[in-house]
Length: 275
Image (spheres, rainbow, N blue to C red):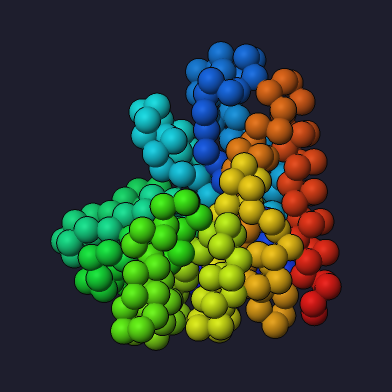
């Protein structure tokens, strides 16, 4: 299998890991020696990446954390560094884009050509024509927001549509009409394990990006049990703050590695209890 899906399958196998480290910089939480650097975000990310690259399946930089610091250049350098130093690890740009088709074309160019991301997160509220420019990049992944991890998700995502919750309608569209190139995937929060299991039943083997573990408090075992495929993969379990800021001292990278290993072990225990 080629394209993003193939790279992800190889990363799952090579690292024996479903862990994705979210690269969400907050300079005020950096160790002083890093914060004083000319490019503090890149140096922080580089240290985290070097410490964790052999035990993750992906990295996920969140766009707003760079734009807020006017650090888009450091975002680009971070993605380039992963591709050059660890070319087998996919990078998912968490940008949650979604607009009318002509604007989405520009957003797709931004994600895939300017930043060189392997995948991007998108918002489906405007429908297929807002997603199509991303899906047209057949070798890249497009992660559609389905059942998000935040408390307010129920405000809209549980609304009934033809006798079922809206998030399930999104899951079916993603698995069928939107997935003609096999490069569509979904975002489903670990904070809602029952809904995660329902989505898995709808979409089959489709990759699911699963935020919400760590600082958001989701229970890993239930999320993995409900969301994994029959092969024990299918999930990209994302943790950001609990890994990045496991220590605010000079040992921050070693602490991040220890936190990543701990999460990988917890996930793998849950995977192997079923398969």
